[in-house]
Image 1 (cartoon, helix red, strand yellow):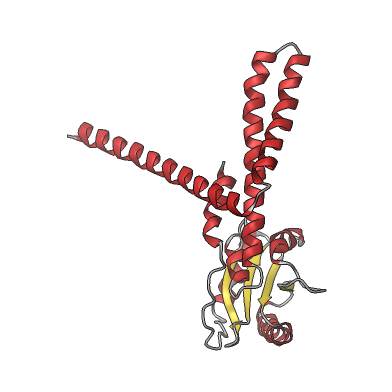
Image 2: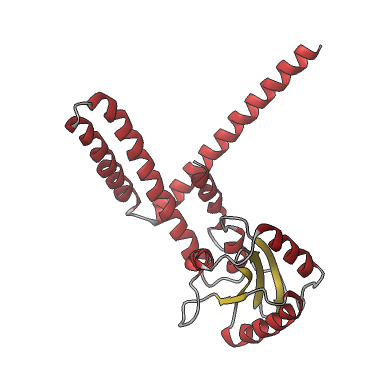
Length: 242
């Protein structure tokens, strides 16, 4: 009986893995099809990356007298280079479509790499201006999106609320946009990664527990639409896992 159950469980696990691989492959194909329609330079760039990187590795094989060993490696590295180019161009397109739309900053924060604690819309207006809170090694990070003159007041109020509770913990604030002093959506993650690491894991946990009791100041914030093209984010996650 037990042996039969183990066999069935293993069969089910294999089926689940095959289904997951099929789904990932389907996502990549779908994203490639969508990207190719909008990005005429996609295939030339991917082909160029494959030929240059693969050619260099294969060429090293001929120079070192190991052509049959390095040729498969050259093909593999060429494919990897082409996939990296593909992933980056997809990411650029997704962020370009999301830029300027309500809810774009929240969507970008959901796609941050690393151990960040994101709380959406801790302050907002009915005009879809919003402030989102991020906790991590740097401390507290407030990310605002919307009309610059309105989010300035939102940021000031939220910063004052938080500072009463967190003491000496650093508080950073950013406004998403393309004007002077603002952070473009596509560069948000890079800016966060450049911040100094002021807190350790346990300190971030304690900070999160403190702020959980603070609550939000949502001001009946209507939920913004998901940025156009955001459904392509699944392929970015797939690419990062490979």
